[in-house]
Length: 255
Ligand code: NAD
Image (cartoon, rainbow, N blue to C red; front, side, top):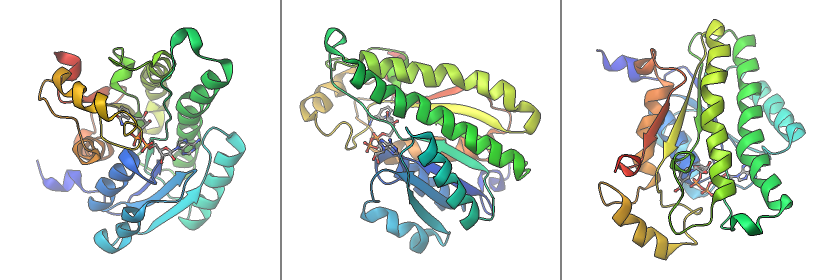
């Protein structure tokens, strides 16, 4: 197989939650493979984001968007569409939040927040992306939803029932969205990262340490460890894959 099948030259990718962490790692991977990059996030990008254009010679633009608000998402898409001439081939809804709160203590406000970002935010990002891909008649559409190993199992030593529920929803919606987008040539898959060292897990240094024992390869991931899977799913190398979930977890769900 020619390595050309991994190239994303001439394609445009949109990554939510792309200001830092896993989202930024996905943006870097896609840019390295040649794609122009747009990121949506509620925060300004961290320093590394500004390297995208310089390092990989692609176009990169960031937009302040709250994915839990449909109007904010629609505004973001309108601005992105204008700046990138309506092009869109790859979308990676990565924005997500977590709460370390017990099942018996979870309030409706906390649950709504998690559902708003992790479920509705992912769903509507994918929907708006699919509409733009269809309008732009891309023949290489790939949507990669970000779920989690939390969609398979309880996170040991963390109170995460609501978070697990939202990630399960992402994994469950993936094949159903994929089936509806087949006629448009758009593939939809999801990624379930394992334990990754980011701002999301930083508040639990003791857990990062103890999680090592649960992982088959005995190593907590860095965002860099999971970006290759995203590039693969975005590229023609995975052209026969749709509706799948790909665990990038050091074997934690298999052990
Ligand atoms: P992170 O906190 O570093 O990144 C999340 C990003 O989403 C941040 O930049 C944040 O500002 C952004 N965001 C939050 N709410 C938003 C909103 N309403 N609108 C737009 N952007 C918003 O954490 P991360 O670990 O990089 O998480 C990225 C994704 O990976 C999340 O969906 C998370 O659930 C998932 N994940 C993380 C791990 C892990 O161990 N870190 C494991 C499995 C899955």
